[in-house]
Image (cartoon, rainbow, N blue to C red; front, side, top):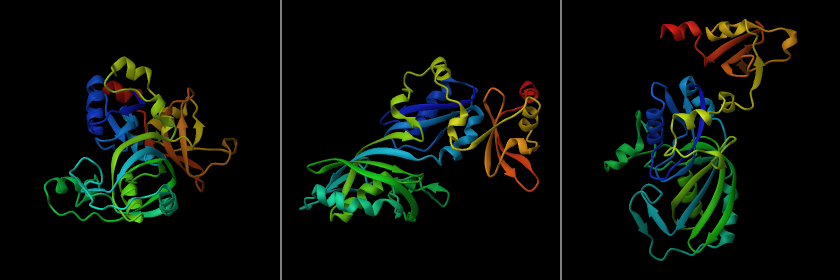
Length: 299
């Protein structure tokens, strides 16, 4: 089994729970995921099956869209409702105009302080492990990119945002910082990842209902992990060479090539991701996704 699966992660499940459930259904097939979602969150979790797990770094590159709701006048150690929430006394009332006014500050490349209850690694271990033990945690600031923020709704002390961003962005932190810019605090009460690249929540499957047959039926070609990279169709003779990690030459007939390319077999299935060496006029496989048939037989 080889390909991708678009899953709608249920609330209260960890991303690991999804991997374990699907792994049980497709025994002896390696299963991984791209882009961890907190237990509170729902929505798109892209699952990689078989050697498609090698595509996780490429899936991280895809833009992500979230819809999140925040409650003003509240504060918590985790910046959401997963830890004890403190109600701020005499918290100022925030207007819709105030929210709209500060939103542009959080679009583009911004410096963000991730929550202490996060998967950010501190000395090789997730920050949340120390935080849960009550130990002090110093999470370093990081630069992230936010492509778009839209205020969808503001009623009373609740406001809802749609955010499109790059990898590593903490939505909890954005809500917290927007509230701070309005002179108060906020905690995230709900989060749904509605899109990763062109994987949408509307087309995602429910992992609670998934069995091996459903997984096979909803398997998505691995090329969808790298939608904007140029494809090259291999000849039948070149396929086994690429499967073995060997470089192949390219000619003028191939056209102008540079950077990364996808190498696909005559049926269109992804065999490898390669890099073009223009000086030597060679296509050099970097991530091989198919094992030669003779290796499969030996295994």
